[in-house]
Amino acid sequence: MARKLRFFAVLFACAIPIVLVDGCGGSGGSSPEAAVRAQFIAQADPICRQVNAKRVAFNASLGYATSLSKSRTRSAIEREVPALVAYERQALVQLQALKAPTSMAANWQAILSGLRQISTNTGRLVSYAKSNNVKASARIAPLDRGIWLKLLPIAAREGFAHCGRLT
Image 1 (tube, rainbow, N blue to C red):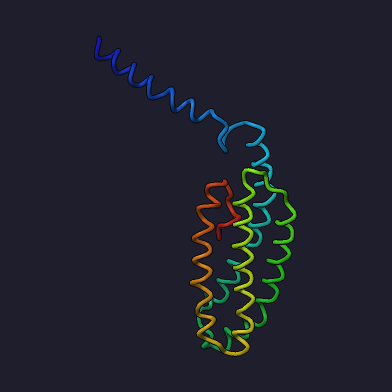
Image 2 (spheres, rainbow, N blue to C red):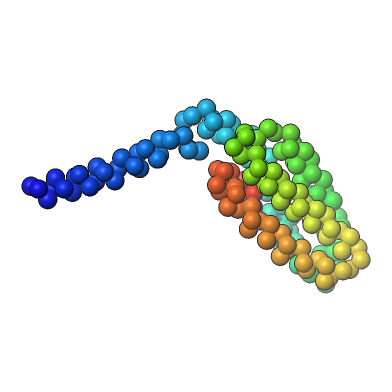
C-alpha cells in the first residue's frame, strides 16, 4: 500500500510541472497572442503553399536543373523561370504586407529574407542559361538547400506548414 502511495505521489509531482508549463501561454495556448499568431499563420501559409506548389512543379519539370548541359534545359529555364520569379516576387509583396505578431516578427523577417534570396537565386538561372554558365548554375541548388535548411527549424518553431518549408 505504501508503495502505491509513493508511486502516485511521484506521478502527481511530475504531472504538476507538465500541466503548469503547458498552461503558461505558449504558442499552442488559447491566449489572445496565440489567436493572433494562428490568424497570421492562416493568412501567410496559403500564399506560401501556392508558391511552393509552383516551385515544386517547376523543379519537377526540369528535374531541378543542376546542369545546363542540355539545350532543352536551357531553353526551359529561359522560358519558365521569369514567370516563376515574377510569381514569387508578387507573393513576397503579399507576405510583406502582412503584419506579423511582435513575438514572431524577427523570425518572420528571417523567413521573408530567405524566400527573397531563393527567388533571387532562381532568377539568376536565366542569365546563367543564356550565357551557358554551367559552373554558376550548379551552385544555385546547394545555396538554396542551405537556405531551406535554415528556414525549416524557424518555420517549425513558429507553426508554419508552408512558409519556410518547401512542401
